[in-house]
Length: 264
Image (cartoon, rainbow, N blue to C red; front, side, top):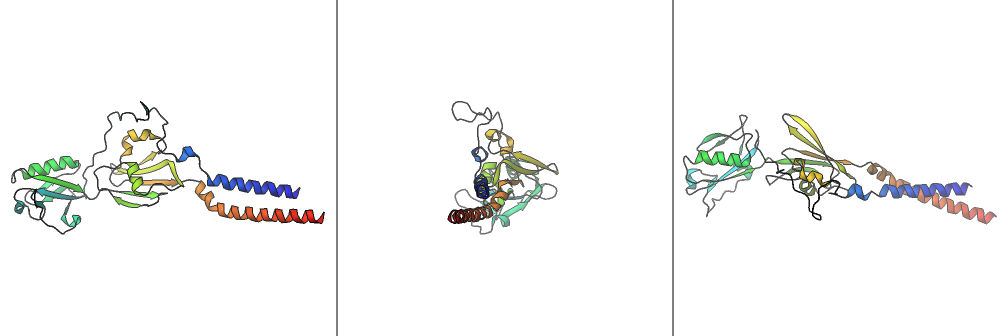
């Protein structure tokens, strides 16, 4: 009877170890069709007019401004001709401008231009208009160097990431961080976002592709993305110990069985 009980205990430990090492396919598969988001085969439905979030400019932002004009001597160090660029070995940060506490960019020749809360296109239009009084047909290029997101938790490469584009989706951000680990929750991704001086918490289920047609699919400046660990991660830390115990008990059962048979 004791041997039988030991065998039951060994079987229980083996099954428990197997459960700890496995995960439901439904919990790890991305972009499942859980809603009415398909039409005509596997094509995702229309976005109902939802457009990518436009990147805006805020106080403290770092902006590079570059001009392509016929007479680059008019705005030295930040202008070139279209066919011949002026050599400039300075970094982007050395060539950039900070949006001041009043929301202005202080630029050569024209002085302060209010850009706070403008999109990049609106800021480009305002700067171009200011310079047209002095320069014919200026070509203005703006880049925002302070668009960054922080990705933490169960991803392969957590850290602070600067975004080179003017828009980025959540899957792109997670891909940049090396994707989720095997212990990252696909159903509870948290995005912490600054909104009107406060902090908004957004929950995203990566296994449901409905969110792809939602504004929350697009990241905003200073977003913090947190991937929560699954409970089975804690169990996985115990699994090696369970395997050792299972091996010891199995060995003990075999030895005990051998001794009982021999004595009989």
